[in-house]
Length: 464
Image (cartoon, rainbow, N blue to C red):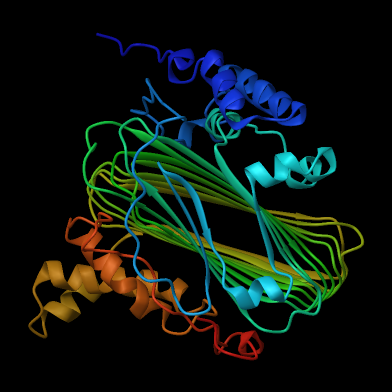
């Protein structure tokens, strides 16, 4: 019997969107954004580009009964990292814990309530960096934004800033959509981590996590944005990240995909300022029936800019993956150096991955390259390890972990592979990563440091 056609209006009826806007006391600008996004949600396909529709893996998504206004108790929290600005999103709302020394220095965090109350200019500033959603899931996330804030770090603030952003799915049918607007002033040094987890329970229903990030990097700023995606294996997630770079600014996107049922990631970086650089580093591990759909766009407009995109995925059982990268070098972007590297390893006959690199070069005085591959684990490497006494499954696991560590070792965070290993090991073994009162799988204190490839990444001081 043919599968039933999904009733998307049952996922999120317009009345629910209107009730959410009433509860949040939306200004007219936001109400218009929600209404248009809901129209797009009903009309757009899951994948707008017909060239990629055959590669999309969003079967089985059913968010009927989604409740963006669902409320529940606040999740328990571990002690705040010393000196860090912590922002938590859960069924209890958004909690901001900012050290007094940052407040005195002019670092400011405004939540949705503050932004709405500040007037139309504040609202337009908050919404200004976004683009119109082009697919159904992205439009859904825009229509039900129910958490958000604007973070501003003033020009000339030389003390490194550590921001820990935590999101926890904790009630059935939850729809958690977080919008972040961040401005890093001239010379600012920022380490931002976005971590997504789930609490025990509600494992038999799908929940939605939507994340929207707009970064504005002023001249000479350095920003590291690390995302750890580790919700339960029924969570449906959509990420939209956008950044613009000023002269000599430096940005590193890092993303570790370790959980979720269906996950869509869209990264767009616009290198506007002369001498700016962006690293986009992504690692995925998928097993059972997980799927990841990742897209990276690097647009070079300024001269003497540098872009690097490295994506690696390991897929077992019936997992699916797709990664596509686009480098576009505009006509004035002379002396650009940019490349895309997309590689996937398949650990079973049922796993599948597709890698699609694209170069659009409109300027002659540049260097742009790409590399891509999808292949099973190398049997010669497995045989080599087995011949030295290591069992076959352990050999495959070691090879897979080493394959992913290639990405983590190139991130400008000291010891990131060691930091992420417990989470990766738990997923590999099928263990639970739930957020609970006695167990907090959040990141520890981190240091931003240089790598062999990028020694200039080291910050002036340690970030905690």
